[in-house]
Length: 191
Image (cartoon, rainbow, N blue to C red; front, top):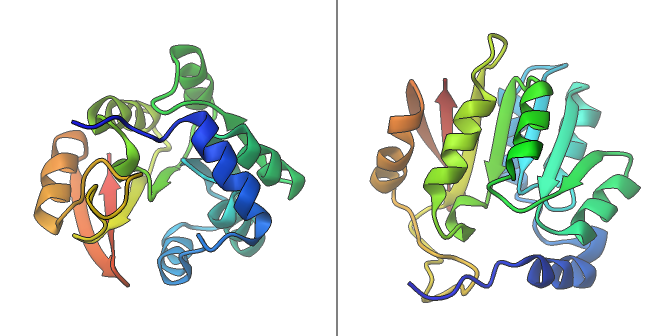
């Protein structure tokens, strides 16, 4: 496996260049996620970037949102918009994981993240842990749909098909349902 370029420094540079005017808005995908999450839900977005999705959930659904991203530059931009966020590598260190569990999220969201991780399994163990309380409703994951593998996009460690994503997520969740949204796969998972 080749080295993973997805470091704090790399993403700080990306967010410093893109700022609040990022192209990473994924309109159709985020429309669907906003539709799926009920009003007033507690949502943790892992790999949140500058909080494009969280801002929509807060403004359109009155959700209580918390973002976590490897980039402190992204978190600073997120906080400048009145959102809450924590800079941390993913998977999270144990002390932060305990703090996030105490937030008792209804939903954990990770869009455009799994393909960046060197190993998705420790991350998925953490997501599953965050959903072990009685109020938990589910997790939502989005990845490029069989496009932009490592040979095309150096940030990506792998690409996913519908089958490979279902195979990855099924051991961690009670139910996994997949939808296609404009070259993206959206996995809707229940604990």
